[in-house]
Structure formats: C-alpha cells, structure tokens
Amino acid sequence: MRKGRVRIAWGVLSFFAVLFLVSCSAVALTGRKQLNLVPDSEMLATSTDQYSQFMKENKVSTDADQTARIKRVGARIQAAVEDYARKNGREKDLQGYAWEFNLVESKEVNAWCMPGGKVVFYTGIMPICQDDDGVAVVMGHEVAHAVAKHGSERMSQQLIVQGGGAALTAALASKPQQTQQLWMSAFGAGAQYGVMMPFERGQESEADHLGLIFMAMAGYDPSHAVAFWKRMAAGSASAEKPPEFMSTHPSDENRIKKIQQELPEAEKYYAKKKSF
Image (cartoon, rainbow, N blue to C red):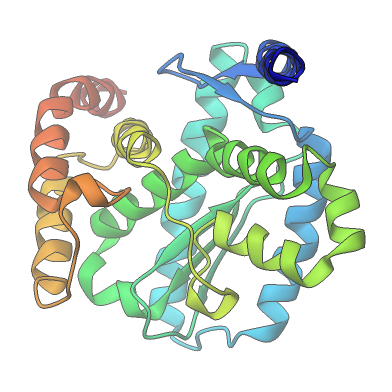
C-alpha cells in the first residue's frame, strides 16, 4: 500500500514537472521563467468579455481632465511598450492587444490592467497620483503586470488548485460566477469581486522594476516613483497592515529602497528618450 502511494506521489510530481517544462515562458527584460497554462488567445478573449462586463457595471468618471490624463499617459506608455517589443523581436507578446484606458468612480485606491491592455484607474487613487508623472508610475506598474503575464501565471496556479488544471473556458462554463470572481481578483479588480488575491511579492517587485523602465521609455522621469510610493505609504499609514513576511506585498520601506536601487537602470532609458 505504501509503495503504491509513493508511486502515485512520484507520478503526480512527474506530471507537474513535465507540465512546468512544456508551459514555461520567460518574462520580457527580466528573463524570469514562469508557469503559463492558459493560451494567450483564451486569456485575451476572456479579458475582453470580463472587462466589458466590468465597464457596464461601474460608473465611468465624468471628470474630463482626469480622464484625459489617464488616456494621455496610457497612450504614451502603450507606444513605448510596443516600440520596445518591435525593436526586440517580441511583437508576439502583444499580439491581439486592444488597449483601453478608463477612469471609473470609486473611493478605492486602486488601478489594474488585464491581458490585452485593458486598464482601469479608480478615482480614489488620483489624489495620490497628483499629476502625469504619478499616473505614469501606476500605469507603468500595472501595464508591467500584464506584459509580464502575472495574471496568467496566477490563473494557471489557481486553475491547478481548484480545477486540476482544467481549461479556463471549461471553468467558466461549469462555475461561471466563481470563475469570474477568480478572474477579477487575479487582476486586482477589488473587493466587490470577493477577497482580492494580491500579487506575490516577487511579481510586485518585478512590476515595480518593469514599470520604472516603461515609464522612462515613455519620457516620464522614473525618480517620481519614489515620491509616489512615499505618498501611498503616508496615505495607508493609518491602515492595519501585516508585517512583510506575512504579506505578499513588499513593505513600503523595502519597496522604496528597492526602487531607489533600480533607478540608475531606468534613468538610462529616460536619458536616451530625452536625447531624441
């Protein structure tokens, strides 16, 4: 009996080892290997449907100036990311993207980006952003999550846990409400879709790193990221937060320190952009 259990255990481990090898991809710029079980075409199609549903259920901001700011900064970072992909032979990473940048009414301090460049900012984060540079910090960070396929990575992990590796379309068909909650929380869409599933610390740090580079490529000074995260830390100072080792997000202090260490690399892209 024991030998049989050992064989089954090794069989399961072997299965997931093979699964990892055949489903492994590399993140742009960082080269980190990641598990991705969901085809990009499936992610993009589901993203379009879920984003459309979200926009129908939420109020679009009527603040013309702030909405224009989101769209302006978004378009510049989109152009920078597309230019990078084109020059580095990674056009396939953005294949099927149909970018959208929207501002919705909500007191929640949040923003997110789905596969395909579907971006939403909440009005609650705008006072912390303050200006185009602040918006660029957040926009670069959220677009980085999408370009690095962090959502796909988390969906793959959750589908294995909840559905034994079942396809996303099958999960949507069999458990549409639960899968929608899983989908929206996977991209940080907020508490109204259940308990938000935060990105892992490594993914958050990777998004910070890539976000600095993307905003610099778009012509925004990446040093503004330090001031933004200090404002974010000050705004959340009264909130109860767990110690870093109990949280998936970096502590405010460590996040800022790491960003400061990464600034010299990002500033090279900013200097190159200014020279043209």
